[in-house]
Image (cartoon, rainbow, N blue to C red; front, side):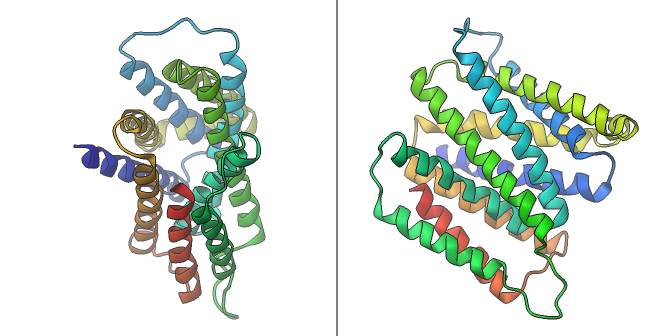
Amino acid sequence: MNYVLLAIVTICCSVQQIFKKAYNVKKVGNVFVFSAASAFTAMIFFVISSKGVFTILPPKVLPYSICFAMAYCLSTTTSMIAIKLGPLSISSLITSYSLIIPTFYGFIILEEPLKLWLMFGIILLLISLFFINREKQGEEKKITFKWCIFAFLSFIGNGMLSIIQKAHQTEFDGMYKNEFMIIALLITSLVLVIIAIIYDREKAFTGLKKGFWLYTGCGVANGIVNLLVLILSGKMPASVMFPVISAGGVLMAAFVSVFIYKEFLSKTQWLGLMIGTVSIVLLNI
């Protein structure tokens, strides 16, 4: 049963990226509308999964929720723009690389030991980036400077999410997980709604109407991922769970990128994608 749940998590990770890509392709609204609505849907999912049982939070939890919300705003909006500007497969890979940030946080701040396979993972990550950025002269350019900026910001934002979650769970010994996520996602939704209205009010309301099933599906998938990861964390080793989720999500995104959106990569970029997938597994062990 655990492996069935693990497969569902992997699929839902990819589904989030697919819904983001579909929203961009349809051009029914701006990224802030989609991000706000999907975050709000994920919050509703957490409220429902809590079954109305909530714990009174100490004031110290609020700063963590606010920081998480800011990082979430950065991560979700920039990842959508990166997916819009470049291939879904490579954008997903770069976002998955963000786990190197909490890894460095672990051995620099928390003084966790530096493991041998982590060093191999970092080396393969750098090799992967080298091949991903290689394109033959005359080919249609898939990797642009603008894409690099937003992919990097998504990388930073996603990495900060993991650090804040880790710091929160360390501080409160794993308590208040649902409450922490509900408050953070509510703040995220409010901030992004305000930005969406200021940025383009007319397109904001159009996006809410026409993109309903896309942002709702993305939000539900996000909620399922977070809920099942919490369940599986106590039932199977992290060294099995996280490599499967990360690598499986990247490979599924690559499949969708090629066979649905016809985003073909060069041979060297495919090599970089494969090496990158291996590096993600090593970084997760």
